[in-house]
Length: 138
Image (cartoon, one colour):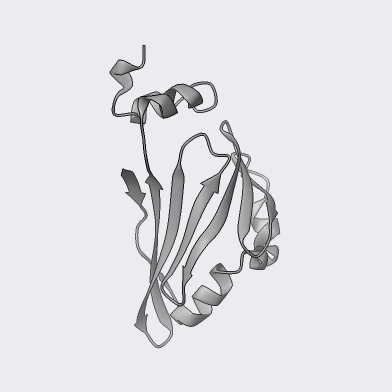
């Protein structure tokens, strides 16, 4: 398994409030204009509901992230559907004070194999540079 972790960010709200906002994806309505703003052509939100978020990522295509687990005030776990690679994503929340939360995002590529790389060569050109077995592809 290969994973990538973001920097930890500080949020000036309680972990309860942050979890409440992030664990219901229909709350994205508040931010839709900013997220689909001009200049952000590589990533476009195409749909969402309480449990899923669909995005269009250039040059990959459409990917839907579905919430598969919620641990109140601590973790929100997502699994990608219709993704060229098996992706999992989770948001971790840690209360660091009454009105402060530390958060980071982890992206995990599970079951990475040469066959996954072959499937995405057309859609995801950068796959070869990340695939640990790229010399065995051809």
